[in-house]
Figure 1 (cartoon, protein in one colour):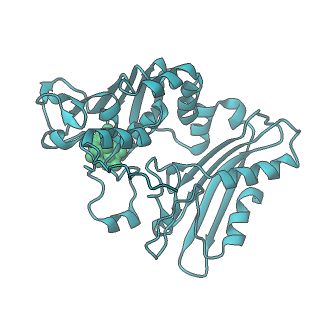
Figure 2: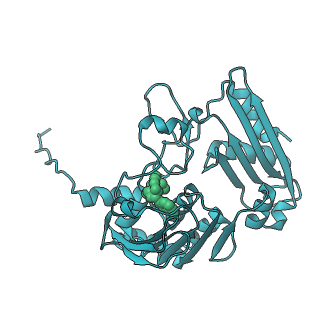
Figure 3: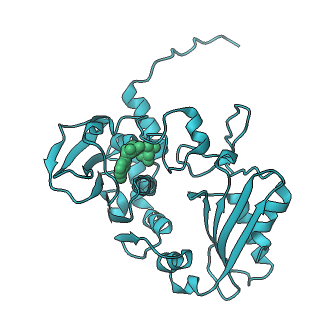
Amino acid sequence: HSLTEPPKINRLSDSVVNRIAAGEVIQRPVSAVKELIENSLDAASTSINLLLKDGGLKLIQISDDGHGIRYEDLPILCERHTTSKLSSFEDLMSIKSMGFRGEALASMTYVSHVTVTTITKGQLHGYRVSYRDGAMEHEPRACAAVKGTQIMVENLFYNMTARKKTLQNSADDYSKIVDLHGATRADVHTVVTSSRLDAIRSVYGVSVARNLIKLEASDNGPSSSVFEMHGFMSNANYAAKKITMVLFINDRLVEWSALKRAIEIVYATTLPKASKPFVYISIVLPPENIDVNVHPTKRETGRQSSSSQINTSKEVILSPKTPGSRSQKVPVHK
Ligand code: ADP
Ligand code: MG
């Protein structure tokens, strides 16, 4: 072996670092939509309007009636790691908001052109300002505004040619966004609905809602920890080509492939071969049992461990004190 010269180590420029990080948080248009909706929910909105052009690549526009953004916060709004939801690491143990990393808006400005219009309570007019690469492009301009915040994300991935091409060629992103929000048209309008079943009906349609069995389970274990589960699963009259599993853990929409597979296996024994179930599950656990900080997209949660180890597993891991009895209740409980 002949020794070769080691390559020189360079420091990446901030703009390269930020664009790489941004590409991780905002992987596709649907990731931006998810982050924007979560921000609107965190802002205590009761109505959220979403408009997409070209599957979100040309335009994603969201309007909410939430609390708005303070004028004095606009300069740092789209900087990385600026958030109104977290101030100490310990806050993560009890976090109730969807967001906390202060990365979503910043990320969007590194891979698209972001314009924010917002008005706060008691103000006579709102402000509009555009952002690029984490910073304001100009001073906020006074403008007419209705209650809440409107955010426009234009020309997503304009500076990431390869990704843009891949997305343009695949027709599935629009369907991913529809997956997330369920309407069968490009303009999605969500309103406060009275019950879970009503919400499922308006998002997934009557044919789903008509064929659901209610699920409920709860457990006040030996310790003080409380487990609660509400859900709906489809009966034998419902048949779809693909399983739909909508899983919320403490009101956070997450993926849990192990549970999905387990449910599929249970259904496989009763449903005809090519038909798959619809399952909606909402699980409530003490927040300190869940690590929401597993992945930048927050698509997965993990077990809060008392050691400082970070859970990098791709699966959701919950930490019921008696794992067997509780986790198995999920697929079989009627
Ligand atoms: P995070 O949600 O993790 O705090 P974001 O980058 O998504 O980070 O948003 C940064 C901050 O901008 C939020 O903490 C919130 O204060 C504010 N914000 C974003 N979207 C809205 C909105 N629709 N209404 C009110 N405030 C918002
Ligand atoms: Mg957010």
